[in-house]
Length: 162
Image 1 (cartoon, helix red, strand yellow):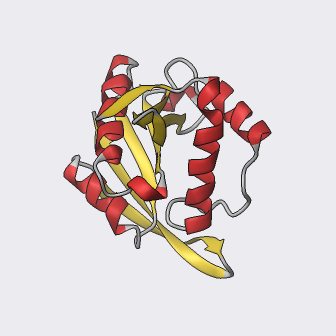
Image 2 (spheres, one colour; image 1 turned 135 degrees about the horizontal axis):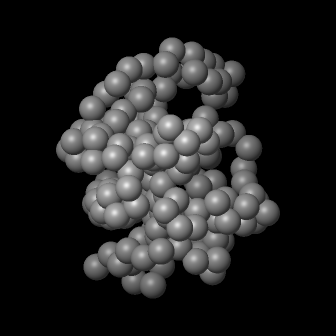
């Protein structure tokens, strides 16, 4: 059974491990530099209140995390949230992401978000499957949006009206 809850400072080591797996595996972010505890502490401080951070626990182990991030600091975009979902590599494809996404949407509605956006790699078919099933639509493709391992990478934008 998976338990979803708000992330706490105690979870930062596990969140860091999972985030760094996503960086290493080159499937979820354009980030290439491994993150450290100082980075995660600053990240955690930005994810209080309506910009929530959640963890998914299974058998007392954090197996995934998700967050609502600021899409744009301009007040006209206050109702638009940007999503992040990262799953421990041993637990991907087992429904944890779906549960986290559903809970983020619930929290988003409670906090006056009317829309979520996310950015994913076109080759991340597992992630896209999750988002399509949850009602997210493809908005467009940013060509050569970043560089990973010396090669240009496209990024797909997706959105859902809450």
